[in-house]
Amino acid sequence: MHDVTAPTAGDLLVILRHSPHGSSWLREGLDAALVGAAFGQRVHLLFMGEGVTALVEGQQAGALGQKGTAPTLEMLEMYDIETLWVEAQALARFGLSPADLMLDPVPLSADALARAVATHPLVLTF
Amino acid sequence: MKLHILNRSPASSQVPAQALSAMGPEDRLLLIEDGVQGALPALIHHYAAIPGRLYALREDLVARGLIGRCDGTVQVVDVDGFVTLTEEAEQTLSWY
Amino acid sequence: MASTELYRYLTVAGVRIGLDPEGYLVDLDQWSPAVAEALAEEEGVTLTAEHWEVLEVLRDFYARYEMAPAMRPLVKAVGRALGPDKGRSIHLMRLFPGSPAKVAARLAGLPKPANCL
Image (cartoon, rainbow over all chains, first blue to last red):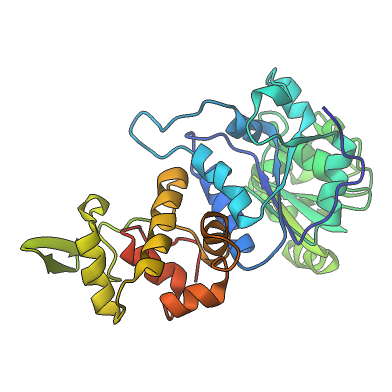
């Protein structure tokens, strides 16, 4: 586990704060990220709060057959969305470690998180 | 400088803490809707880290009968003040 | 997003294939190579081996990611599967004129790409 002290800036930072299945916010945030990337923006993602649970390995479709988000997360690299950050404090709150997560996101300390927000000209919260 | 807009109360939600953790040293926080509860003296300690950068929307305070009960460190703004804050910021972020 | 709005039918080998207002399959399971040929004919395209290999890439993409790709990821996926010479927008524009991501997704029996305008 390594921390990033000077996060590199992209054009758009999308902050995902909601868990899969509970609401449509996670999917809407991912859609926004994909649209940005499809238009050539450098998009970075930050999984914050409950959003860290979106990265837990082994997710499935919902009980009523709703699509899971894991295939979309795996697709991000095809859209050249390769900077994935996760809030270190939120991971700790959920008792998760980076080894529990898919896609190898980089944990951000509280300071690095605030800097990541500050250095992006456009930040969208979902 | 970014303007963060928050509509959740620190008495019932983690969202205010998320907004604070994303704020840079110059950023401002505007409390609206149920967020204005955070302007009460009993809850103001949640915002101790951003002295002078905390705002609350007057009409939401008035609607809730809280206008006379705000902590003295909170800067109360009306809708015109909200617009000014928005114009002064390079970007606004919503925390909900 | 897969559309469920039935707009018209295309008849292929005696079977009615439901299409949405933009010409995408309503029931993705109805796709077959013959359906692709019929859809291509509507576009004025004759499918060659070069078309088919791209349609295969698209069907693999959808099977894996559950979404139809916009242009950039389509170019990337084609480049990975078929080599850098084919992973170029000009190649895809030649095969599927107009809007390659949309046209190729339609012929491959995928929903319309969601994040491509």
